[in-house]
Length: 173
Image (cartoon, rainbow, N blue to C red; front, side):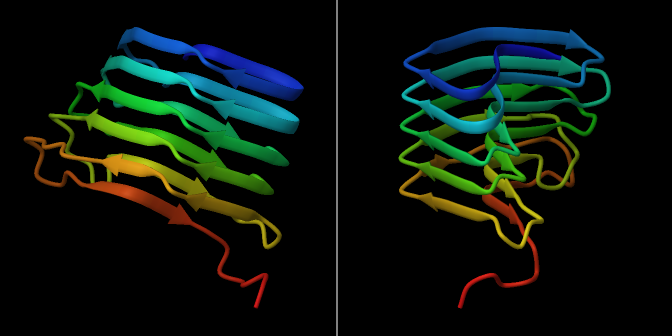
């Protein structure tokens, strides 16, 4: 795994960084611009993340920003673009990936130019992805711009600007 910024703290702010020109070749599991691990509050804002490139034997997991399992997080005003995976395996690319949080706010981000030109996997590219299985989770996702124009030579290739997997039980009325 390669992380440009790996932040582990009770409370963390990651702001005004320019992360670019990261690449990995071979059989790797993940490549992230920003990976935040916090048991408290996290603010990830005004970062520019671009030119992340993977060439993986079996397909990699790549994200501009990943924010997993944080109690209170804000991800805003980030510009994420030019992320590519050049494998025909099973890659997954995310602009922003939030999972298992409690109170997550994702807003005013710009995501574009995510590519997997030889992927043969359905839903390979996800601009914004939210995974939540908690009945008490609150994800506020608004005013984001996602521009996807990726193509692939693979027969099962697919993309999603916004991808959400949540608990089937409604928590508010």
